[in-house]
Amino acid sequence: MKTWIWILGSLYVGLLILASLKSFKKGRSAEDFMFAGSNIGLLLGVLTYAAALFSTFTFLGMPDFFRLHGIGAWIFLALSDGVMVFFLVWFAYHIRKKVQTMGFKGVAGLIGNTYGNKYAGYVIFLSAFLFLIPYVGIQIQGIAIFMQAAFPNSLPAWAWAALIVAVMLVYSEIGGFKAIIFSDAIQALLLLTVIWIIGGVCLNHFGGIKSMFEAIKVVDEKLLSTPGPNGLLTPQFLIASMIAIVMIPVTQPQFTTRIIVMKNLKSTHYMAVSLGFFAILVILPTLFIGMYGAQQYSEATKDEFFANAFLYDQSGFVAALAVIGLIAAGLSTTNAQIFALGSELRGLLKGDEKKVMRITKIGIFFFSIIALAFSLKISDQIVLLARVSFAGTALMGPMILLGILSNKKVGLLMIPLSLLALVIFLLSLADVIPNHYFGLRLDLILFILLSFAALLSHLFSNK
Amino acid sequence: MQIKSRGWKICIIIFVILTIVSFTPLIIPQGIYKPEILGIPYSLWSGFFITLALVILTFAGTRMHPGGEEKKTGK
Image 1: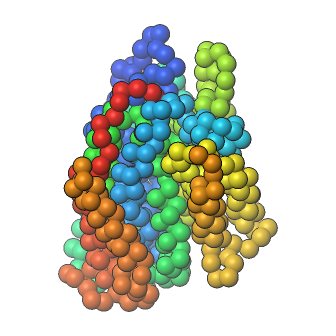
Image 2: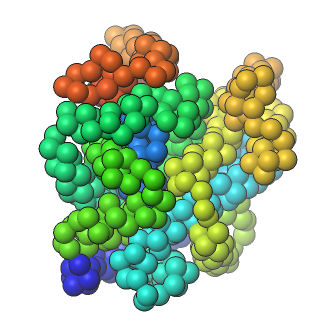
Image 3: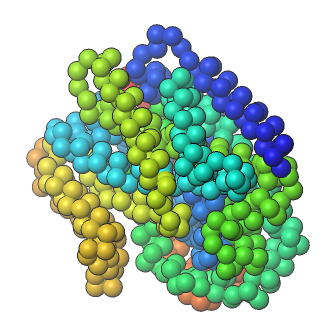
């Protein structure tokens, strides 16, 4: 396996270097560096969006989620993605229209302008920072776990994690957003190929879909329906998750940016459709891997399951592909998020462009170091951590949507309310306050209340 | 434009219905995995078809969306 990792790894690194050099342009403007000239076509658009969306969370997290919670995981992610892509068609039109009149230097900057109040931008940046950092940490940790399993007794987890962050920083610094988009394209194709190869091997182990579910019936019938063996996937959990996932293009700046840098609305729309098909294609094989895990490693820890299902049970070539595929999946999402945080920071800064870019690049470095530190502390299920990240940023959804949709002067009420909701949600995560009230999940209650407040704010705002 | 606009509204109505139905016992009956199709449990195959339907509806939505050509300004 190690020889294959060196061969495939060298090929992959070579492609990344090529992407960086191809994107490097002397004397490029800050706009070129941060937004790739806002001229991305359909194919690159789909692949970069997919690579940013489908990450370690999908590659490792979803098989683990299927293994522990059964087939309801399909509703949790794939069906919610189906809802998201339709929503994307509607949202892309409105945000691109707004950007045409107001310009774009990050979501926080844009929303600060729509409200005519810098604190709106600060609240959005705060939420992105608080909830994207753990998500980036997940990616880095996922890769580090895998590398340790592939190369036991070589480097400690923190050293692998630091190496990954260093690679990401180097190629995004050389090539900017364009290099990230090119590398995303490579990584999305690699992820799709690898996940299908491993999924195919796992399905083959059962001898077909029918036999797979027959085998799972013997393990635990509860895996074949919601809410699953642990009772997690209740309708309320699935609805709250769906809302959080649908809000991803609105509230996670790396996705909003990708909508805006598309060449035109038509390409953006077709990107949404292709993304829907991509989601089905990527999530389906994770079901096979998860069911394989449920049968073979039902009692194992997540690290043991990952190491066995992706490495030790596979041929040397497939295991090496899995290692490279995982690095690709994690790296593409990590750099998308860190770079997006950088562009959000830039949108909030004023003054000389050179100085702003210098602070932005220092900010990107600083965010990477925090994410690296966080990656060494995580011990929760990958999917549940990602879900918290989606739900946390989703709380900003009503405020952002109001800013984008309203043609009137927007009232400022949503700014303190969104901040308050953020604080309440954080308190519930820290177990200071309960996370259920009147039988309802707190994230769902907060989202409903904020949506209602946004509606009232719109109705009572002045022309 | 009128026909497009009406088509887009119909797409939205179907989208809302599909989304609501997806989270009712019609698609996710708690603890029930029958009827199966080719051994695939109920919520999985019905959820798969709804997902596919949503993506196809998204395609229809892109054809019906009334948004016109964008001006080359801004950004």
